[in-house]
Length: 126
Image (cartoon, rainbow, N blue to C red):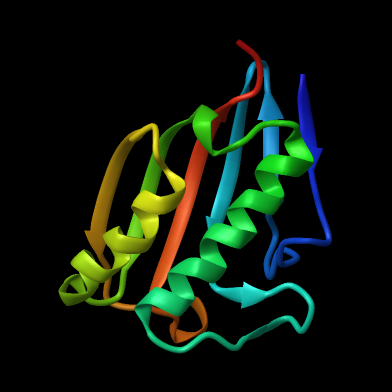
């Protein structure tokens, strides 16, 4: 059974998709970009500030689903510039302390010309 997960503490979907879907014991969250959910705008500048906003958005979705960062099993990270890799990792590692499996790639462009996007898969139950 699939269950849509939504929260006003993370940005609303800007296309034909859900913030996240719970399927069985797993949560599949759509990629999060650094949109401030209160304003609906990208306010953060620079890779560190944008990564912090992305992590806040992911945290809100995890909370809405009843799980947390410690139960994230896989992330996929997209960077507009691989030159931001070290700075991105500096913020990322503060949140993903359990070191989930990860892919990180550079892409030509991201929605709203942001610097990073992260999607996650998390465990809902032990």
